[in-house]
Length: 350
Image (cartoon, rainbow, N blue to C red):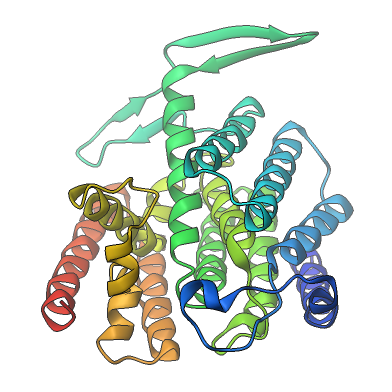
């Protein structure tokens, strides 16, 4: 019950909160603007990320003993959702959004969450905590490992944006997060890792994601929005490094959004666009992201969702049974499959 009770409460809070939001948000003017993206459907309540954040916060405050790491996670989560909510109503420049994401990531670094080492698939460890930056803010003293902080911030910012870019099909961020969090839960309760608090936290993240997924699985009754997608990216990326040792697993379960984000970023650079900003050419084609290409190739939104859920779950479950070297080769296999898939879809959807 140490795992199930918090997850059940988080799930119920999310379901009840989302049900209420669907009825209340339109009265508050919290609806999306489909005409902005050339859609002709009626507006949908938005952004549901507020509900996910509140359910997560309440569950943490009830069932967890707050420490510096959890306070850092809650602080960065609130910061990210607040900035995204403001951006939706008063659009901010892309660099300002990127700065806000970086600040949210650095808050986690200051709280002690970080990547201290990377296992070399060919043997040995790459240690990242050799060089330190020491400073004080009032009575608080900080000792930051520079390389660890750098890789941690990069990891968090990439996952935040990868999950946000994944929101091209409603239900994709929530479903992928639920799968990833469940995989990290099973890894955390395994005898080799044995991190009960991380396991409990992972199951809560899975519960809030699944609770909202019931409403935003295509066709959606409510949209999670940038605030919710970025929040889920932050939570999942944080789970992987909360107590170390799960980055390789997270890389496999989230290989699709990570590789898709890198592909889109490189494609935009080749078309002389900023990586975080799509141009008119992209909006006209509507097929740069892999999930968009799958839609353009003739798959229905639900078929795209189920295909990508299976893709993520397969490699996530595989990661539970592989050592570091095996995970590395599995990631190469994933890369190869996505490259072939991308090539075929590019021919079918030029």
